[in-house]
Amino acid sequence: MTAERRASRRVRVTGWSAGCLVAVGMLAAPSGPTPVFPDHEALASGVWAPRMLPGQGRPVFTLYGTPGDPAVLRELIGVMRERGLGNGFDPGPAARAASKPLFECIAEAGWPVVAYPGCADMQINGGRCVLGPEDAAALAPLADAGIFHAIQLGEWGYYFHNLAPNEGWWRAVYGDKFETFKHLMKPAGLKGYEQAPATRRECYELVQDYYRSRCRDLLGRVISVTGHSHYEAYAAEWGTRCVGLELGENIAFTQSKLAFARGAARQWGLPWSVQVSPWFAGACTTAGPLRGAPGAVRGLDAGHSLSLYERLWLHAWFAGAAMVTPENSIAIFFEEAASPWTLTSHGAKAAEVFRFMQDHSPGVPYTPVAIVLDQFAGYNGYMGRPWGILEPTPGDREIQDLFDHQLFPGSDHIHARPDPANPEASYLRPTPYGEMFDVLLSTASGRVLAAYPVVVLAGDHAFAPAFRDAMDAALRQGTRVLLSERHQAVLGEALLKWQALGAVEVLAPWTHPAAGRSAAIAGSRLRSLAEALLPLRISGDPVGYQINRLPDGWVVELINNRGVVKKPDEPAAVDPTAVARVVLEPRFPATSAREWRSGRRHAGKGPWTVEIGPGASEFVEIGAADAGLVGRSD
Image 1 (spheres, rainbow, N blue to C red):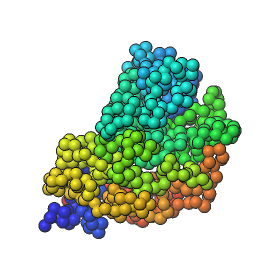
Image 2: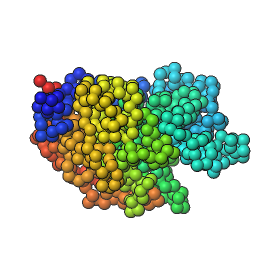
Image 3: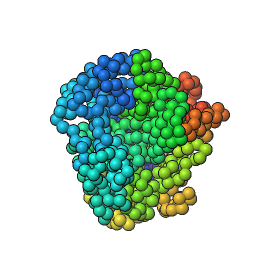
Image 4: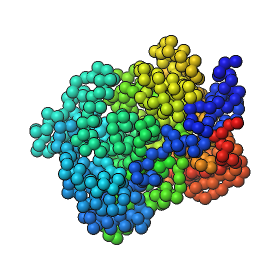
């Protein structure tokens, strides 16, 4: 009897840490034995343990912007505490010597803070944005108190490829000093490189050199924030205090970027964060009535909908973000950013969301499938080319199709036209297989890879010796590896070693009907993974969903992304009939279910039907009949 056939007849231990099990046999045979899912203790103490900001036991919800007067800043901190508006600043004062009295106020509060460098050319190597000892001294009150602080290097990937050669942007930044600094611009047509790179490794090394140089100039205290790129894993590898994302704005690929950021944070043992931008096709949310000309509209009804903000804040928190930042919030949450600090409807909603975050623990995000890309893949969904410049191979197209057509369909409004009736519809999408994926690079250790029951290799892989060794270790621990015939050809006889060590599956070729190209994995195989690995079957209307582990059961986030129509310069329109009805069927012995937001309770063992209003999120906690036995096998 083969090892695979034996596995189909019994519960087999995977690479979970002690006591953290899953029925691997179910991966090949959904009708096989009753699955056993990992327990909370094992998840919360291993690779998947949520990383909070240093010194913080819970996620941080920040205000964007601070007053320049220490007395007013202290007043604002008191207002935030009184009204429950958050517990940090992102950004706070500029990271400059003159800001020391303001940083002393924040240190007194004990709140974490992210600072901008205080210069318009923060992304430019060789420019004026170099912080010195006197600037570091301004941050000393935070450093001495052990309070998390960082200096943002924002949108550096977009700068590198799109702004480095853009003369109009440089003239706007340097004004009458443009002639002095124009020699730092990159040649047109080379996407930020001095000369056309020949290989992926060369691209990697050039971008790495740029990033690390900026980190040195910013006191080595950088928080990377990427929007129009998928470079989160590289920031984690090259050095960052926190893996940051910008979402909202005109940024596509929301959910794949979350998978990249969470995977990078887990691979490198870092916290990660989300900043939600109110910019939307030139319009921007601010306090006050709708006003301004097309392309420059302001007001509470300008920019994105309050519904999307709420969904993104909550989803980032539930997905494991250590910090959630509503961008421009000091100009949105208050009628006027001064006493008496009267809240707008957005400010009241922010207080409600922060209170909800404080009252509930999101548990451990359960993502049993790791999608592993080669270290030098340089995936960049926005540019549509590896490292922004190289010609895509069939393997690169498979990665793009996997994220944009299979896992998060409809999320690309960069290369596909947004829905003209509802251009906001692409920012959060229904997830046919749930958000059960993290993205890792082939630099992941064997310990990290072994934390996932399933590893799917996507795109071209060089299979460096260190990666082969890490995969050896993961296979020995029970991780199942799914790869393509192309990978099989590259591995050659080395594949035989993997097959001797554990479960290796060579996927049959499959053409995705929407893309018309060979896919990394068939849709039917993704469905079988969801069936085998997830503790809930979710059916009914299409929703976005994610499942997290709690000490005494599970909780599922259900996001109804339908029913709210938003254009940048118009108020949101809500369709009250666009209610999503979803059936939850637990695949473990359950006792009851409780909706966190509505308070509705469901008795019995399930299945249960849950209704989610238009543009709303619900969280359903499901208790296990014997929480102590979930995740164990005799």
